[in-house]
Image (cartoon, rainbow, N blue to C red; front, side, top):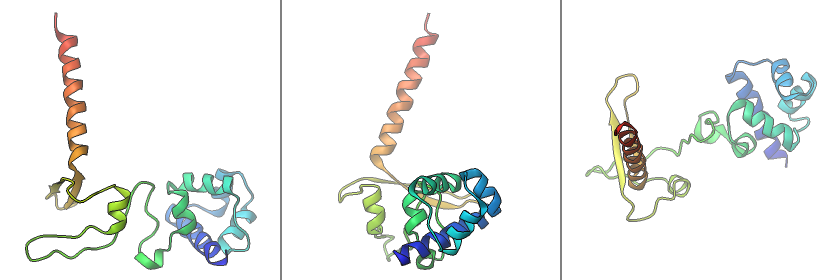
Length: 156
């Protein structure tokens, strides 16, 4: 329990500082005293599950990450809820990469799945994104249905 409490205490302190909030502001948002927040951040005590949930919502992180995330493993702060940093991969001579196991688990990627590779050359946000092919197909199907509905509304 001690190790998890230290993760929680550290995460609460880091998140509050990242969000540029005072202990008083956090206390007010969650509905507790400033002293309670100070004790949570020092590891003297831990918030109950209701307060942990309120803190996770305040900081827009998952409850699991709030309690268990170890920024020393990744050298990065807790990612926002639904955002992930799975680590780094090395590109092989022919451009191949191996997706980290956790990424494959989170996104249910199985051998044989089609992955669409998207890219953005914008200098401020340059990057590559991988999207499951079935996600692209579902989005395309939704768009097609929406366009048909608009066409039917415009028909005499």
